[in-house]
Figure 1: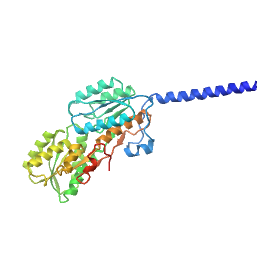
Figure 2 (figure 1 turned 180 degrees about the vertical axis):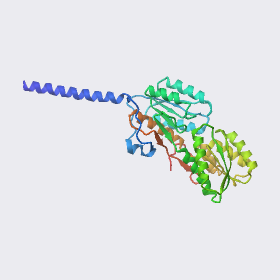
Figure 3 (figure 1 turned 120 degrees about the vertical axis):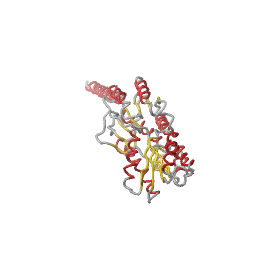
Figure 4 (figure 1 turned 90 degrees about the vertical axis):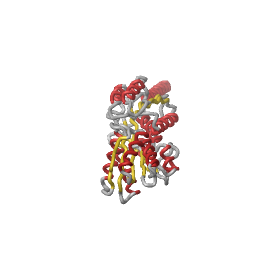
Length: 347
């Protein structure tokens, strides 16, 4: 009798243990009731693992979607490549969509709405403005799909933003010109697309930092609209009015390469230092060849990698802060060879 009772109790305990284990597994496989936002305003990307532990591996096949600004620009190509590379490590299917250019706000919205209708497990976005994809982010929230904005246009309501302090990037370009020309001189700025938060913040950082050095004179700050040819033509006009220019900062490398062409055509490559932002392969090559003088690289491929990791952390119900600050690097002739591969990490 005692033995029978003991055996019965053992079976009950075993069953209860098995039930609890199975229930725990089921809960782990279920989505978070909501995707929590961390209490801290931001966290450096290099501190994520120390704070939250390893990236949670998915327990089932996942489908991510990425809607970017354009795939014409090498920068966004490399972000997408980073996303695909990291997703492949976890066997995650990724659907990448992009409008025809960086000014097609409505087309980008339509693409994002269509891709969201397929209900991906996570939605990665690089919006063209800080408002054009708000409806998609709001819908994703209702569907309990986490959203990660990568690099441009930090948008209200997104689960997390992965990107640089863009004001700091513009500031670093100004500091580089100061180091190169401590006695100052005339400089110009070629601005990105109007309405782009990245452009707005880089302009702010560059302009405000220049004011610290009164021996620098900003003679022109004109839009290049993220376009190489436009930047070349605008720079040619600025050079005709200011033949003694010593430096030009372009808000991205596509435009910086256009500035380089204008400076070369004027025979002033040694006189004028051209500084860009992004660190695209063609710009790094130009720097190695002694043409573009420097770029503040956002390590685009690594941002794509980080975007996938943050999405997985959100799916793991981790309280990721609303801003994950990604790394950057100042690329000059001294270290250009270290960044010829877009997958290269910060040195």
